[in-house]
Amino acid sequence: MSSSLLSLHDVSKRFNQKTVLDQISLNVQAGEIIALVGPSGSGKSTLMNAIMRSVELSSGAIFIEHKNIQDYRNNKTYAQKVGMLHQQYDLVKQLEVVHNVLAGRLNHWGLWQSLLSLIKPQQRHIAEQALSAVGLAEKINQPTAELSGGEQQRVAIARLLVQNPMLILADEPVSALDPANAQNVLALLTKLVREQHKTLIASMHSVEYAKAYFDRMIGIKDGKIVFDLQTNQVSQQQLNALYGLVKTD
Ligand SMILES: Nc1ncnc2c1ncn2[C@@H]1O[C@H](COP(=O)(O)OP(=O)(O)OP(=O)(O)O)[C@@H](O)[C@H]1O
Image (cartoon, rainbow, N blue to C red; front, top):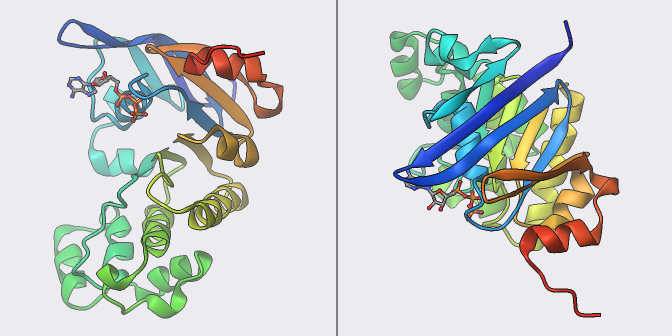
């Protein structure tokens, strides 16, 4: 059996009459670091939401470790396979950083331990470890709202480390950040994914960042894959065609 972590077989999604994903087939091996690129509305978020199981397919099937994702019994088990990083961090701003990081633990805890953790953080050492990995150990008791955008995205990464899924999906993880912060966060995220032998698929607005930090690039247009290559093999012509840019020379 191959080491395929994720595979999509003829995945299609229609919203009302509109086809948003059009027979996408794709294989991802464990350890890959992949950027999804393509114009706005091409279907990148829908593709990731389908893998997250938050969008139901119109047809086709998705497998994680050769098992249909529909067959993972509950969300807790599934969260140990796949986790997602959002553009807007998705943190509870009023809470201290430690609580947001330990929210990644909810998939491992029962109800009482989760409730108790809101009063007295349970397994604080786990949060400490994850926060030092993202360089924020000293912010553990700070209200999350007081952190900068880049720091908040690093807290969200720490929460993912605590959740510890095999596959990380990131939906435009740095598009809300300024260039310096965006590059720091991407460098950190890809470094941690490599060190911890995880797999990353991120949708990226910036082709430049996709080239700098990712190994494989998948171009999506109108819900179809138009190229799927090692990043250094992608030509300017392919990118122009993807974004519908007219040749000027
Ligand atoms: N829940 C929904 N109901 C109806 N249409 C939807 C829904 N979700 C997405 N769409 C449509 O599907 C298409 C693809 O959207 P999607 O968000 O996947 O694109 P994207 O490539 O991620 O775009 P962007 O780069 O702008 O985030 C869009 O036309 C969008 O309007």
